[in-house]
Length: 177
Image 1 (tube, rainbow, N blue to C red):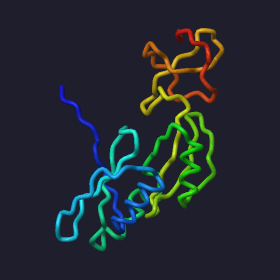
Image 2 (cartoon, one colour):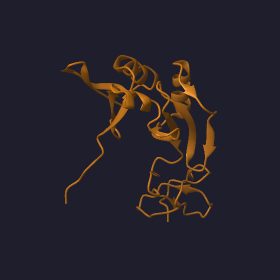
Image 3 (tube, one colour):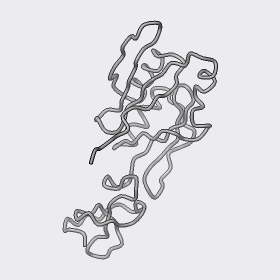
C-alpha cells in the first residue's frame, strides 16, 4: 500500500515579502524556500517550526479574480489551524508582533483556542490540545485505573472518549485500564 500526505497548501497573498515577514516574524514559521521562477513569479514556502504538519505555498495573487480572494479563501470561516504546545507563550508572542485576535482565548473540552487573522484577513485557530495524545479523528485516551473519572493518553492504544476531556490527566503513573 502506498502512503500519501498533504504537503503544501496554497495561500493567496498580496505581496510575497510582506507575507514572508508576517509568517516568519509573527508566527515563527521558517522560510523553507524562496525561488525566483522568472517573469515576476516566486515559489515561496513557509512551515511551522518543529517539522510537523504541512507547509504553506505563499502564492501572490496576480489576476483580478485572485486578488478578490486574498483574505477570503475560507469565506470568513476559520480555515487554518495552528497547533502549539505552549499556548500562552505563542499567544503573547503573536500579540507582541501585532497579530489581530478576534477573541480572547477560551477553554474548550479539546483545549485552549483563540481565533486570529493573518496579514491578509484569513481566519485561523491558534490551539493547544488538552492532551497531546488526542488528535483529530477522535484520538486515543483511556480512563485512569483508579476510576477517578480523569482521562489520559492510553498506552495500550484503546480508543476512548471521542473528544478530549475537560479535566487534566491523572498523575498516577500506572497504566490505564
